[in-house]
Amino acid sequence: MNKKIITALIALGSSWFSAQALADPTYNLGLIKQFNYQGFNTVITGINDSGQAIGYYTYQGTSGAIYRSMLISGFDRNDTSKNFTYKGLQFSPYGSLILGISSNGLIAGVGYFQSALSAGTLIAGGLYGKIGTAYKTLPFSFDVSSTATGINAKGVVTCVVGNGGSYSYIIQPGGKMTRVAVPGADPNFTQVNGINDAGDVVGIFYPDSKNTNLSKGFIRHANGTYAVIFPTFGKLKTVSAEINGINRQGDVVGDVTVLVSSGVSQFPRKYPFLRTADGKIQYFDYTITLNGLDSADDLVGSVGTNLGPYATDAIIIIPDPVSKVHK
Image 1 (cartoon, rainbow, N blue to C red):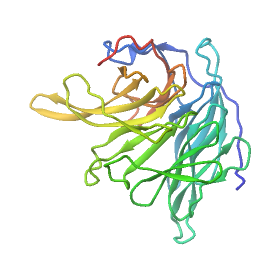
Image 2 (cartoon, rainbow, N blue to C red; image 1 turned 180 degrees about the vertical axis):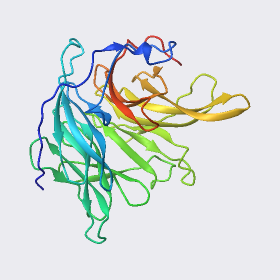
Image 3 (cartoon, rainbow, N blue to C red; image 1 turned 90 degrees about the vertical axis):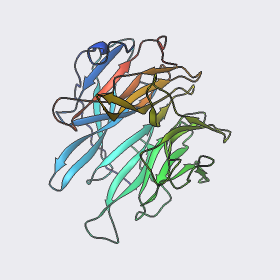
C-alpha cells in the first residue's frame, strides 16, 4: 500500500544542558536535549546507531487529537553542536505513529484508517518497511486493531493484535508468526515493545489479567527463553514494571512504579531506568519517560513540561557511564 511521504527540513531544539537541572541531584544523568516540534506535544520512540530517531507529535484536529510521525536525523554524541533535521512521515490522513527503527533504517508503526464495517470508526493498522517505499501491512484484517511495535535489520517485526486483550507476535520476513507469551502468564495480556538485531524481544505482561495495573517486564531471548524484569527501587515497594526498548548488546530501558509515602498516604510514582545486560540499573527523574536507546546507551523519550498535565517535550539523553547505580 503506497503512503505519501511529506518531507520538510527544519532546525529543531535548543542547546544541550546538564540533566542535573532537570532531575533529582542524586541521579547520575549526563547531558540532555529537550525540544518540541512547533510547540506541539512531542515524543521520541526510538533511535538507531546512525543518529536517526523516530517519534511523533500531537495536534488537535477538528475531531480530536491527531498523531503525526517524524524521522529526526543528525544526532551525534561526539558533536552536540549539530542541529537536527525533521522529516514528516504520513501513513494516513487520520494519523500515524512510528514506534520502531532498525540499525539499517527500517521502520515499524501504525496508521489509522476508516473501518469498512463501522462508518466514522478508526481502526489501527500495523505498517512496516523502508522509508520512502511502499510500506507493508501486517497480515491481519483491517477491522482487527494491529500495531507493529518494532523491527530489526533482518526485517523481523514485533506486533500487537486485538480489539480486546493484547496478542503479541514475532513475524519473520517469510511470514512465519511466533506467538509471544510469558510462561505462566495470561497469553492474552502480553505486549511486545521492541526487538534488536539478535532477535531478543522486550515487553510487558500481566501476571493477573484481572488487574492490568500490575505489570512486569520481560525479555524473550532469541532462543525462546524468557527473563522477567521486576526491579526494586531502594526500600520502596515495587508495584509494576515495563520494558520499552532494547539495544544491540541487550541493554534495556523501561520504568518501575513504586509506592511513595506522603504523610499517612501512599501514591504510585514511575521511575524510568536503564538496565545493562549485566544487570546494573541506573534510575532517572520521574518526570521522564524512556522509550528507546542505541548501542552507546544514548536514551530517547519524553519529559513532562509545565504547560499542562499532558504537555510533553521530546528528549535525548547522553548519560554518564553507569557507575553510580542502584542495586
